[in-house]
Amino acid sequence: MASNVVDVSALSEFLTKDRKDYGKIFGLKMADGFAAKQDFVRLGINEEISLVRDELDNLTQPGRTGSTNFSTTFIRQKERIGKLKPAKVDLKLTEEELYKLRVSYIGQREPGNPRDINSLPGRNYLMNRVMMGIGKEINRAIFKGVENRATGVQGGLNLFDGLDFKLTAGYTTVANGGVGDIPAGNKVANPAASVTEANILGELKKMVELIYSSETLIEYRDEDASLFIPPIWYQFMVNALDSALSNGSQVVSKKGDNYVFNLLPNTVIKPRTYMIGISNMIWSPNGNFFWLHQDVDTDIPRIKFQEVDRDIKILIDFECNVDYADGRVIVLYK
Image 1 (cartoon, helix red, strand yellow):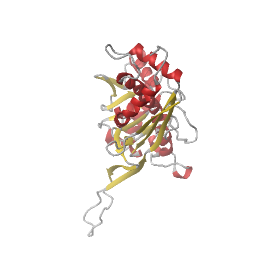
Image 2 (cartoon, helix red, strand yellow; image 1 turned 90 degrees about the vertical axis):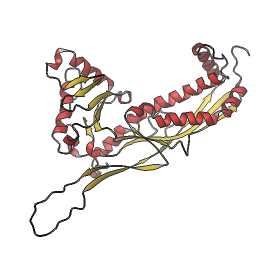
Image 3 (cartoon, one colour; image 1 turned 45 degrees about the horizontal axis):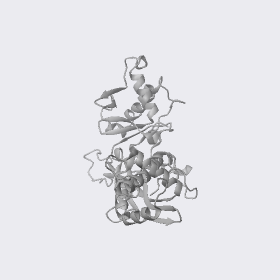
Image 4 (cartoon, one colour; image 1 turned 90 degrees about the horizontal axis):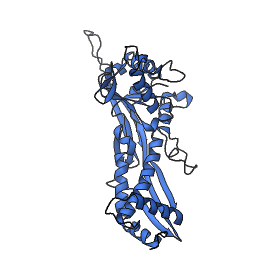
């Protein structure tokens, strides 16, 4: 084969033969949650699921009253319905793009692998690049997504409503068009106009003060929890702790490889790439955020390959979403 030619027919034939395997591999990657796997409960579902958390309601009352007065709301539940959102990839690899992929593969191949892009290692290289691109775009959608089915390719930002959108709706009252399941007191009252290295520790302290001021939230002070922040804010925090800006009064301490609050010893402060460009931070007990994906045991993502002239089309259909269960235990900075 000439060095500048890709055998499109052979590549399409071999990819088609292996499409079920690639569907299973991609389904497992979706189930693993890409960037969501560290922070989210991962659920394989069909269409929709009830996300429920419960807490105890009031029980005690004065005694020796001469009568019974039964409580019937011992368990209070908060329920949200999480739904899968359909997404797709309609990819056409032109003759020129296939050649570029072939050159990239030859340059990056492992010793002993065949040089041909049509080989199994070559095909795996191609499909891994496609799946890696999907994972990167889903990562963007986790926090910054706003579903818009009419806008085409937007790098993942239009696949589903991400957490920024959902948490804003959760905090907004029903009267104002929101969901209203995050209490009004669960947001810092006076956040800084901008967060810097000079004020980051003070702004983190406001999150702790809010939790300690709430009868509901303070019950979780010793629970495993997470504070998700933009990576640049994390850098501000680390620099501030390492400099005179901390003034010897640390809100945060290092515990092993993690940073935790002194007064919330099991809350880990986590920088996340899906929050790049977001001026907010979110606290919640672990297990309250969910990554929803297709149940791979019954419905794996569909992948199809087509040879058209000198090009190859790759068609992928899948479903996913993110959500939370209980807004009562979510704290917002802004």
